[in-house]
Length: 230
Image 1 (cartoon, rainbow, N blue to C red):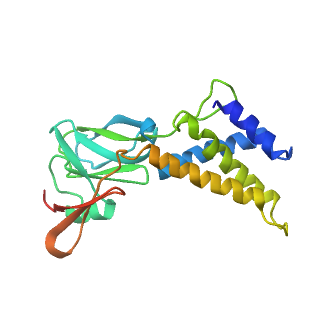
Image 2 (image 1 turned 90 degrees about the vertical axis):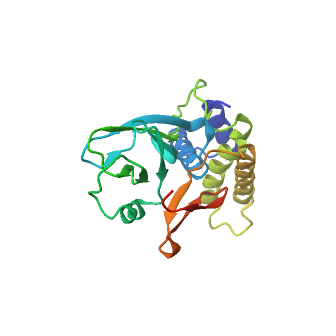
Image 3 (image 1 turned 30 degrees about the vertical axis):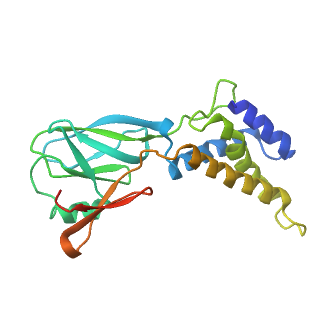
């Protein structure tokens, strides 16, 4: 469905003029950001190149970055970098800031890509990640195409209606029929979305544990053991 039709359906079912159409559109855009963050969508996968300036070990993520750095390639060494669990682990693995050499490990935190080792000259990295979804507008040419079309109504319409009916029915002594109905419909839609994309590329995170010199590769799909220095 296009964005205009989604908003038309929401207004028709809501039957409450106190909710401005502009507000509903803003909520819809917030919702898509939320959905695409908790389930990285294949349609939002992209790549970008960042340059680590020689003598430094961090750089801002691309402006369109949203989540899920699932692969990083060092274009100078032609090697794939490990994506480490967080900045703290990255620093501990490399004993501080000044270890010199080509970049082998990275960690993305708070919109910044932290790197180790610290290269003497510029090194370009190709990042594979999920970008922010396109901002929707109230026109027929605007479509939330990052989500499969058959799930637009079960996910997008249902959550907005759940959110608004939870306010409308707040304090009503009778059962919150609409609130419960649209919440359950949204949950079913999200489950269908996960089923529709069973094998998406998720970030594999390397974490070094103190005992035994062993690291683990983790994501939501699997856990596998790996050599800490490999």
